[in-house]
Image (cartoon, rainbow, N blue to C red; front, side, top):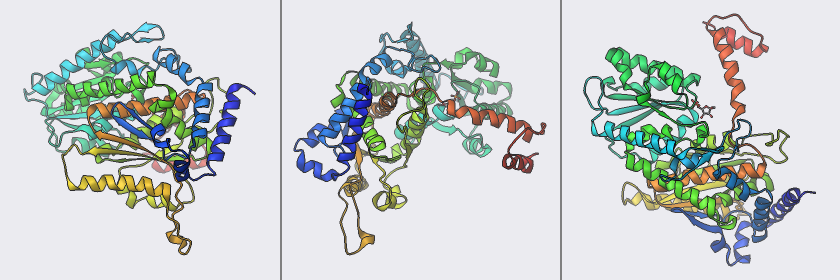
Length: 520
Ligand code: F6P
């Protein structure tokens, strides 16, 4: 048996054994439990003491991380090695937010100078739009940005905007992701084209949905402003030629490189609309917060490393105790899109069934993730968390001080977050009335943020990015490709041709009947 296989066996055995003990009982047995399992990093306080591991279980998890080579993999990641093996690319999102002069290299090629040049251009553009120095075709200042993109070109900016938007923004930001015409119709409703800037965001600039929406937005601008409407278009992409072909000149195109994965791209030019609508200082602070977490991840020993420990707690539940679902529940309205963001980050990154070398994986990989915002979900699906037949671990995220200032509701919000985590772990026995029995022993992580600032949001995003990376190393999978989305795209192109009157293709009877029913 290899060292790694032995470490997996020891880990699984330790988890099974720990599963026999109630989480609450670990506290009595381990006086230093809280001290060991609360990690502070970059403004976040991460409490992993309500996870099912004992001291020995955690030690087995850390041994597994060492045996799997997490530390060496982390070095390769930061060194810009081709960790995305199926596409022979680095995954260097850390370079996007590193301070000037960082000297990152992607597969041996220096990249930091170029990153800094794009950042300078983004800053100049953001400041010119915000100050009114850059105006629309009729000479009016821009009041609204319509951000068009999908997946990684949408979820990150949406998360950031909802988290940090001022109550009365000087520049409003709207998003269009879905190709459903209802989405763009709603985004454009009530807008004045003369004061609207459209930012088309697509790494490839070929994504069907985004190009359809961008074409519709361009037509909308032209309908009101004529050809001059094209001057209201800007883009973020790696595909500068396609941007030019679409009619967006280089001066309004903000580039990034293929070593930025879509779901890791929020701090690249993909964040342009946030940089404009929130202001450059806010965007720079977001980057600084992420860079602080990058430093923590890179330098902290595994036993005190927030992303690594969060990943190991996840594996303890997933692989040690066979729990295939996880809830992410921010008790912060402003973080209400966190679960939606993490669905792509975690499930597109780690929803894989073969190893780096293409062999079937030996261990179950990504869990399904869901959640919205507390307290709303307490009145929706929390019943199942407390009394359902499956144990579903929860990541609680709470913010101590509300951005809107002190309010009586804030204490209610925090009390509920704390109480839910407590109730899940402790339960409440009631032998006489089974319907009122709470089994408890349901694990959670608790991330406490003092204030939701651009810095702490950046740190939170980077925390989860690196958590996903560590999990990928442990599962021996490529967290940076997404071949699983391709088949559906290819088939959609064929089906579309048939819906538009093309010759019928070969399909299963169910598919053929749907096409027949919907053909124009
Ligand atoms: O859904 C697949 C995907 O390639 C994601 O990985 C990506 O974030 C999204 O589509 C959008 O891609 P693009 O930024 O190239 O439009």
